[in-house]
Structures are given as C-alpha cells and as structure tokens.
Length: 151
Image (tube, rainbow, N blue to C red; front, side):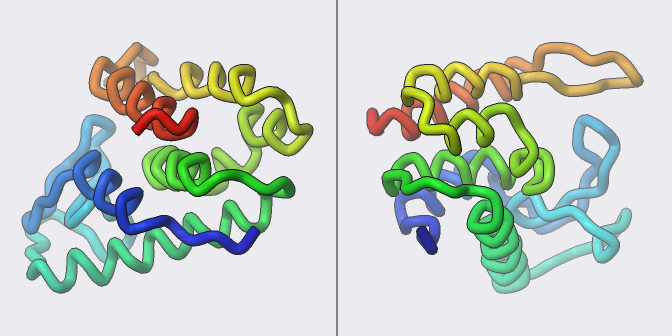
C-alpha cells in the first residue's frame, strides 16, 4: 500500500473540483476556495493566489491519502486508488474510511460489487432535503470508470 495519487489522478481531481480563487458558498452553504478546499481558514471574502490554491490542494490530497492508508487493508491498482482519492476528497476521508464501499473492498469483494457502491454517493442536502445531485452522478460515473481502469 502506501500509494499516492498519480499525476493523471491529481489532474482529474483538479478538473472535478475546478479552481476558484475567491471563496464561495457551495451547495450546502460551506465556504469553499481553491480546488474545493474548506475549513476554518475559508470565510466570506477570502482571496487566494494560484500558489495558495495548489498548496492547499497538495495538503488536502495528502490528508485524504493518510485516511485511505489507515483504512485500506488490501492492495489496489493505481486507478482504483486515484478513484478512491477523488471520492474521499469530495466526501471526506472519515466518511469514506467508514463506508460500506471500503468495507467491501477490504473483504476483497469483486470489483464490480465494490464499484456499485459509488452510486451511494450521489446525494446532496439542499435546504435540509436530501436529493440526487446530477453533478455528483456524473462525477461518480467518471470515478467509477477510473476505478474499473476504463480511463
């Protein structure tokens, strides 16, 4: 194990997150900047340089990788790891670390069974209502294709 996200995986993740140098509230109202960075350092009016966004992205990816290394107990392909990094970056390392998807992967379930779990991560809560988010549906399809090695 001990994998890190590949250059193509990181580039795909940056495309998924897109870049904003101005803080904005995401769909759930969480202030976000850079490549999907959130946290106590992001408030309304925050402005970043491209270098700040890249540094935060690198730190956020490293944190996701640590979560995965602590909870992934089987060897995976580079594409599978990159897909898991993208999913965990978007949903949060702790959520993925305790997910059915990772539990099934760790029991060496067939890749197609594990892959089906990507469909559980297509929901957003908007104004207190959980609903299917079309943007997440398309992102999960791209992550699923990467997980299955079809990129």
